[in-house]
Amino acid sequence: MLDEKALAITPEDEGTERVFAVETRTGHGVRRVRHARHVVLAIGYYDHPNRLDVPGEDLPFVHHYYGEPHPHYRQRVIIVGGGNSAAESALEMCRAGAHVTLVHRGPELKSTVKYWVRPDIENRIKEGSIAARFNTVVTEIRPTAVLVHSAGSPAGATDVELPCDAVYLLTGYRADSAFIQQAGVRLDERDAPAHDPETFETDVPGLFVAGGAIAGADTGTVFIENGRFHGEKIVQVIASRLARR
Image (tube, rainbow, N blue to C red; front, side, top):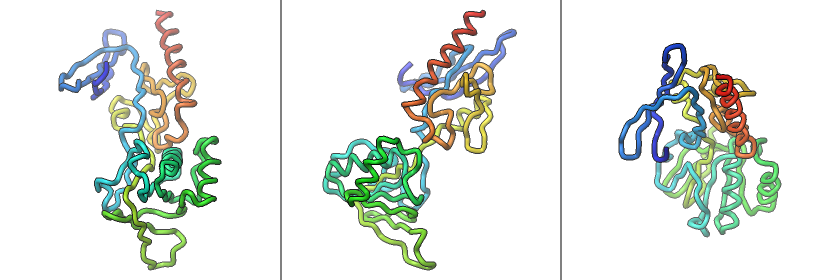
């Protein structure tokens, strides 16, 4: 069902069988409960951005999601992050005429950057089309500038002010771990749900996870190119069980 938010998944015993009560709410506020023997959590992780929790993060020109580059033609744009989202948006905005500065806390781009994206972004940085500040963190966002601190700065040094017209905090996202845990699934120290890597069934029998929801905080390990095969395997497992019934 479209335009319907899942609120809770509650395991229930129905005679000798385990079923799940799935409570939902429609866009018009109607609440429903449906029952199922098997449930697949393919909830992704984009609803929950990793916040920096710095002053100014909620200013109107600060974004946790990237849409399109053209509104930023000839604007000074600061992108915070060192993964795929940061790299791909930096390339797009650069080619659309924006003046892009990439700020990343690590010494280089993340190892999870896609192999076909990495040469492009690295070459643009090398030639100066995209400015890059590595080993650097954002300390504050102001209406016209971002304050950053470099790991190589001497003790007591004043933060550097980078003038900007827009800021994109593309520092990653994570699945709704509280929702998964509420269903009875155990999470590890990185918020990844306990599951069988062959069947994608969690430690709650009949409850499966697919796609980015399996990764916890390490979302860079699952993307379209490898996560799209999870569903096929899960369907095979469920179908085989139903056939035995």
